[in-house]
Length: 306
Image 1 (cartoon, helix red, strand yellow):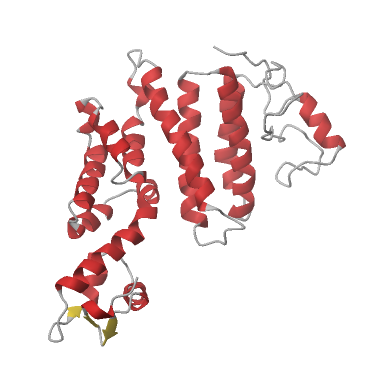
Image 2 (cartoon, one colour):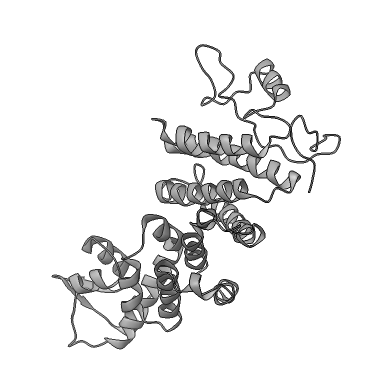
């Protein structure tokens, strides 16, 4: 157990005074009436000469939960550009996690905080994936998501259930998300097989496993059919793998159906690879050199390009 913080606010008084003096408040922290209880501790890298274990600057477990709740429920509900919200909440959740690590917290509050972090990263991925990299960098977001979800899975085992079902009631959801986010990855597959059977047999976990098996077996028809059954968060977790899977499907079909006499229905292909618009399927096909004419797809081995 590390140093235990004593700050019960979302931001220590010392930091509030400094940032007010230097006019370093984020636009989402400013209030016309000058109130300071909306200021949230910002992330700062560890540096020589700065004492990161000063208990007055470390928030208690209760304060960290309060801060997380405020960020994901209040700030994320503000009528503002999600890019502005993302930049602010991303930084402040990172500071929350930093306080947790310094104090070596292992309790139900830690589980709650990490679950909310995972949800935030996945939601942001869904809402900002079409924005330029200067606004949203998916690689950085994915790196933090991977780090947090692994910490969460460790916490599930570190915090004993204590006889209450409420404690890990969301575990199956996040085990499923981890398996989908790391589709066809050996470490994730081995982790899943090491789980107790009562977790593995839950519907959401079983479905995530079947999706992995379909990907390994190149059973793309079954795979995309299963993807259609996922929740929004689960689909956000697997989304980074969807385009490569669609391309692999088309590459194999381009070989299997390569014939001047063979025409494949564009609408059938659209449904097969999980598209809701035939225009999206057409754009993908054309980008790989496949011809689409009058609602029919003409596959030829020689025409395919990566």
